[in-house]
Structures are given as structure tokens and as C-alpha cells.
Length: 342
Image: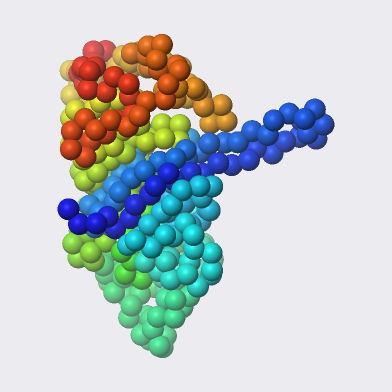
């Protein structure tokens, strides 16, 4: 296999918790939110990588680190073997961000309501000094709109965002990301706020652009059901750590971590006869605070298979099969039933 397009090693981001005056006076220990806690992953050219997990597990923080919208606390990130974690000059970051773009979750707030669509799409061209004249930039804007199936493009140039539907807004967001011809796009839950009927259209469009524009996606989602269709590799995130990762079909068809199984069981069942009633999701309790990550395996307070070793020792990453790993003391030993009864 070719070298990864992007890779992360021991990627870490901790946030300091602001202390009150009285906490400082008492000399209380300063807490840290361990949002991303030393994760490793590889992303290959035109092989989309998705990251799934509950809200608050650190998915979006990973995306912001990859864009260098946040500086990592520790670890390294490599884009085509260049360490972007150590980039500190504005010129280096500007050049990097031309090759790496982001699509935000909320298309309603991602676009400036005061600007016309033409201005929104022309702005990145002006920032990166692309197009010698306004007419040339206008042609590039029209081409970007056609690329995301907003045709005829002249119809949209003078419109404001409030004049577009949710799906059209997200297409404009995609056009803004694609107009610089990036190698890599961070897609942060790009369809979660859209109607179900529109989601498939946007995902199909994004998928078509993989071949047309040679682009690769890092797809952040809490909807595990869309990952099989859209991505090639998947990482399951829990409390700041990737507890399982591998090829999407291997992880979804043969999950090796109890948390992955719980996510799969929670996916709505489309069969009305099997989907009646409430499924018996095999975990209990709430996600612990990221300021007080449990000792040993961070999932053990909620795990139905936890033993004494899980409370004391942090599990190492085990390779169950080629490119399929899990951080569980009993990975490969526990049989999972994905048809958990209601």
C-alpha cells in the first residue's frame, strides 16, 4: 500500500479548566479536559476515513487539530510527510490550508448572511491570490457551482444564503471547500442538520468528487449507519481515544470492542417487525467527565464484560486481523451478537 496522505501519531489536545478565585485560594489542583488523548491513525489517498462516537468524545477537536485551528498539546501530524504540528509561520499555515479545507456541520451559520454567494466563493480565491481579474474569478466561481450541481450558476451568484434551502447552503459550503482544489477535506457531520431526503444527495455528490477532483475526506459523524456507504476506514472514538479502527466492513461486521457493539445496536432497525419496542443496548450509565478519565480501560465503568484487570491496566492496541485493531483486554475473545433482542 502507498504511504499515507495524512497520519497522526500520539495526537493529544488537553484544555485547561478555568479555576474560580476560591479554587485558586484553596490551592486546588488545576483540572484538564483530555479532549484528545494520544491517538494514532493513517488516511490514504482517496480512501475516506470516518470517526464515530457519542457527542463530546472529541471528534470535532480532532478535525480542528488537523486543520490547525487548534494547536496540539503533544504529538505529530504529517501531511505528505510534512509535520504540520510544528508549523508556526503564517506563510506555512496559509499554504497548508490551501490544500486542506473544512465543511462545517451547520450550513445555516457557516455562510455569512451579509454576503452574496459570489462574494462567499470569491473570498478564498482572493486570499490565496488565484485569478488575475474579477472576470477570471467569476468563471472559477461558476465552475465551482456547476461542480456541486447548482445550475445554472448565474441563478445563484447574486443570492444571499437566506434565499437558499439547507441542502443548497451545504452545496455552497462544499463549493467553497472545493474551489481551491484541495487534496483533503475535513467534513464535520456535513449532513446531520439536513433532511433525510437531502442527505443521500449530498453524500453522493461528495463521493462523486473523490474521483472527479482526486480529493480525500476525513468524515466526522455520530451516525454510524452512513459510514459503510461513504468511507473506507473507520475509527471508533470514546472519551478522547480511538478504541477500535480498521476497514469499515471489518469493524461494522465484526466489532471487537464492546463500545463499538453498543453503537451498532443503537442504530435504528429499518424492519418494522424487528424494530418494535426498545432495544436492549448492552451498556449503562453516562460518559464520564473528560477531566476525570477512569483508570485502566476508560470504558470499564460502562462495559458489561469488565473484569478486575480492566480497572487497573490500560489495554494495549491489539491487531485482531490485518488493519483491524482494538483497545480491549478481551478483544477477539468476546462473541458479539449484533442482533441484540429488544
